[in-house]
Length: 223
Image 1 (spheres, helix red, strand yellow):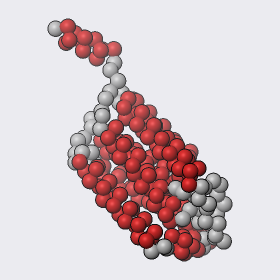
Image 2 (cartoon, rainbow, N blue to C red):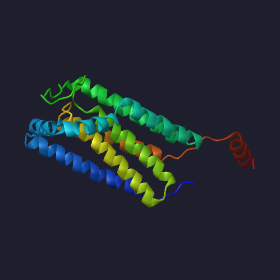
Image 3 (tube, rainbow, N blue to C red):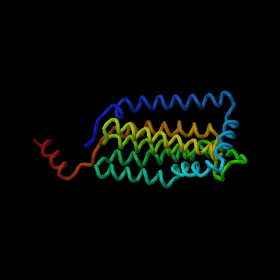
């Protein structure tokens, strides 16, 4: 049985608005002060310390394609078991579309990766961060879907954990020196746009109709 509460209603748009404002503000501040490269260099040097590098590598692995894809597939299967076809489609299609838009934007901008002395090896272009896009969209979208079946305190906890994990993955990309700070913030904002679409689509709670349901609907319409 699903539980309805403010987190799933207007609260979703409200907190996403504050989240977007905070990230957009940070992006504008870094660009306005021309601190992108310097901030990236400082964070990369801090993250490259041997006492931290193992933890940073572990955290960034959460945003790799395999875990993100598995999370989307498993959550979509749960939705299908509940006969929620719109939710299942959203949980698969929105993260995929977000990743595709990120790849297209990378090819359009063609920004090179930082290439610092502390930078880890990475292929492809730098802007925006694919890890930031995929975890912002995928992690939080799944958390919002799960929040349907939880009471408000537990639902808030799941959402907070998803947001924290996505933020840690995004930060890890700068700590590894494979993205500039602006790349990560832009990726999070792009992911936030797709997340908003996911929130709208998840609100369309349409279930697959069983043969019994179809016959019942026909009987009512005939009457």
